[in-house]
Length: 172
Image 1 (cartoon, helix red, strand yellow):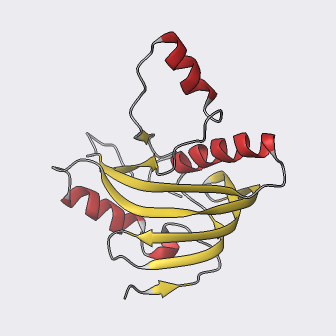
Image 2 (cartoon, helix red, strand yellow):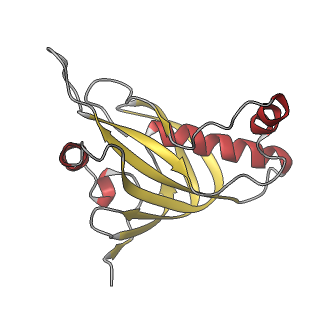
Image 3 (cartoon, helix red, strand yellow):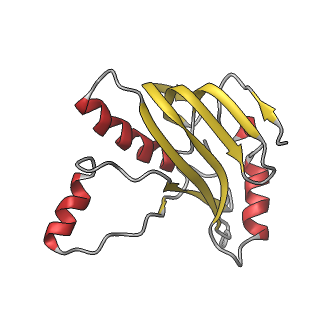
């Protein structure tokens, strides 16, 4: 049976995915490319913008479970923080659902991935970047941009979304 914990808030570091752990794993798997490191899912009741040492971020409130995919440990909490690239995707899902029903609980599921990025020259900071892969397709009518793209005959983009970390050596 997998180890389970109940931290006061879920974030990469609180489930054992520190910057060094993720960087070492991404580097060890650089031949593979992008590797999943965390699966998080649940339902969101509300969001709140907060300031931390890395700048502004979103605190998700609801019921969440995160699985550290490196050691298979499971973690549950009522507060969730995710890397910025995943935060943007989840905020978009919440925004669409809350427009239709402001009091609803919003279901979501994402895999957080890491991709090795070697430093070049005198560059400093982490040697990986996070990506996100949604695990739940939006319901009909929720993804307006994909509907417009289909009407225009534009092929659907890959599901893997990535963005570099904001700031050198910083992660969320």
